Image (cartoon, rainbow, N blue to C red; front, side, top):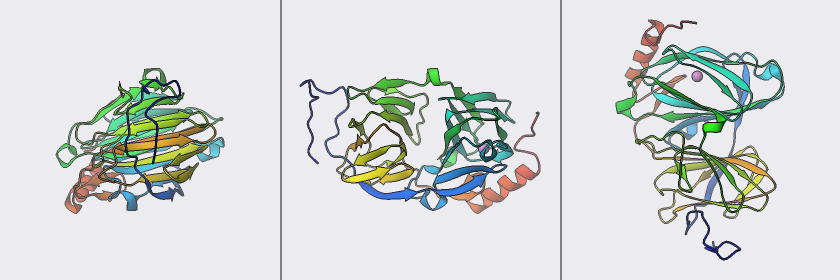
Length: 301
Ligand code: CO
């Protein structure tokens, strides 16, 4: 791929340089499913991709203006062994958990929950009509952190670090860093990068990526081009891990929005049973037993 290192004005772009861009390895269409008490959603990152996209375990996209698709929400359920990151584009959802955390997640806000050794939580819509749209990403924890204390943080939209590139791309930096802006949350073991990008038509966006990190782009409005590949809306593009590639270059179709997500693979065994993700079957038995015996926390509410 050829590219200019200069902006149209002749000045170096403020954006970081990508000398060789990753290509698209494959496009994935999510699977329609439902979870919780009947919330309709699209599972974009499915269990069969956990190894390929290590350290990410799941990505769900939900979006509907029909309350019947979301109203029942996600009543009390447990998690152990990983982190959940919920990013709300539109709508209001109340989170409560057994570690005593409570937070209202609303338009443009993010909630980061580290389940660690275990929480029981609920996520219940606080609206009876209108649009509910957002994403939930599951990020694995390294073996030595799976039984750590639970942790929780709410980040309202106004507090999410943002930047605007010279090409007019608006970037919300949920995790990691982009264009010199540090994100709302950082993690040492997995170094997650989580960007929400709004791209005007024709804009180009560059992001350096460690070649060893697994990365994908989910287009949720409009259309992007990555290398020679067109990526339409509601598709995830898995980016190839090419030793010589130092980042990704996106080119926008009309008014596009996309998530760009990458992280350092843990390369540890992944054993999932529903809401528990551990390293061995034995640890899964223990998680199920601890949950049944109330050791993942009762629910005060
Ligand atoms: Co949950």
